[in-house]
Length: 121
Image 1 (cartoon, rainbow, N blue to C red):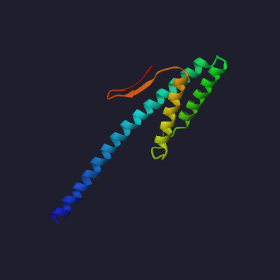
Image 2 (cartoon, rainbow, N blue to C red):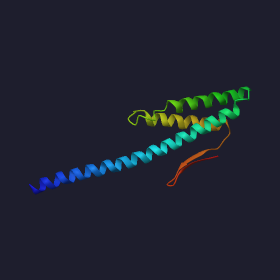
Image 3 (cartoon, one colour):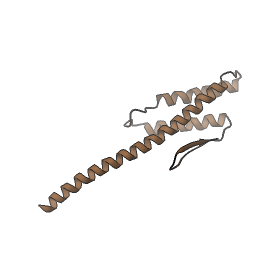
Image 4 (cartoon, helix red, strand yellow):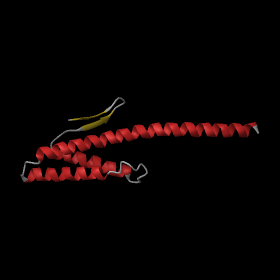
C-alpha cells in the first residue's frame, strides 16, 4: 500500500514539475525563434526599401528574392506550435535569407547566445 501511494505521489509531483519545465523551455525556444524571424523580417523590409528605386535587372532579381523572403515570413505559423512543418518552414526561411544575403554580397551570422540574439554583418 505504501509503495503504491508513494508511486502515485511521485507521479503527480513529477508531472507537475515536468509541465512547468516544459513551459519554460517552450517559452525560451519560442522567443529565440521569434527573435530570429523578426530579425530576418526587419532585414528584408529595410533592403526592400533601399532597392525599391533601382530599376536595373540585377536589383529586380534582388527585390524578387526579398519579396519571396517577406512572403515566407508572413506565412509562417507563429500562433500554431503544433504545426507539423514548423521546423521545415523555418529551415526554408533560413535558406532564403542566406540566398538573399549572397545576392546582396553581405556576410551574415545569426547567433543566439545566453544573454541575447544578434544579427551581425
